[in-house]
Image 1 (cartoon, rainbow, N blue to C red):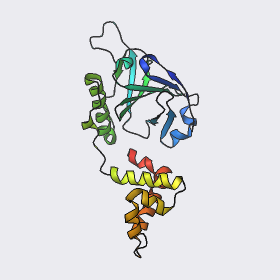
Image 2 (cartoon, rainbow, N blue to C red):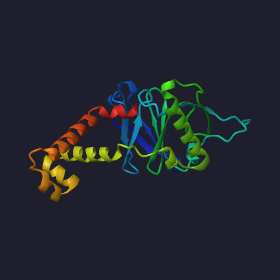
Image 3 (cartoon, one colour):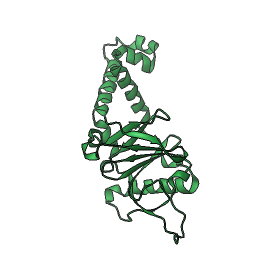
Image 4 (cartoon, helix red, strand yellow):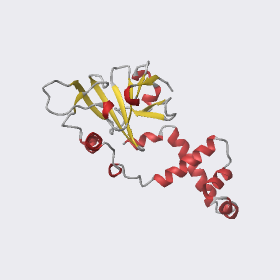
Length: 225
């Protein structure tokens, strides 16, 4: 894990500067880069644009006085923005509204000024729906000041993944399988079913723990596809 220097920028948004180039950052090779926000004490997770098709690549240029359209002004957006400056000169912008996120990979002019953003009109077939989704998010944030829930439908696997995450937390904390089961489904159910010779409950907890460790050790990358 590499923790970049960071400081507060105008209007409360944060800028992080990574002193190590992306090609040397082990977390980028794993698919993501994370650093702690000293203001809110929560992590900002940046996905590698080469691995995550939901990251929207844009090219920024300074606004000319003759431009008829309003500029893209990061400081004026009604959301929280975190900027990570990578060693290759690219600016990774994480826009957060409520519990929803949108990441931009910006090349060209610096984002600390009003800009004109340019986006490719043609994308590889496998990235088309991801790019259109990100573009719709950006337009909604720019026009209506929010990232709407309709663009972030809940994952059908959410309930199962929450159980797996809780099982992983218990395993990493040194809890026994029975203690994990009690935390997940309650002591009464465990007392009734834990010694069942068919081992259904034990197997369920073992699978959750095993799946949690698998996701932690790189399996989460499959969610990016």
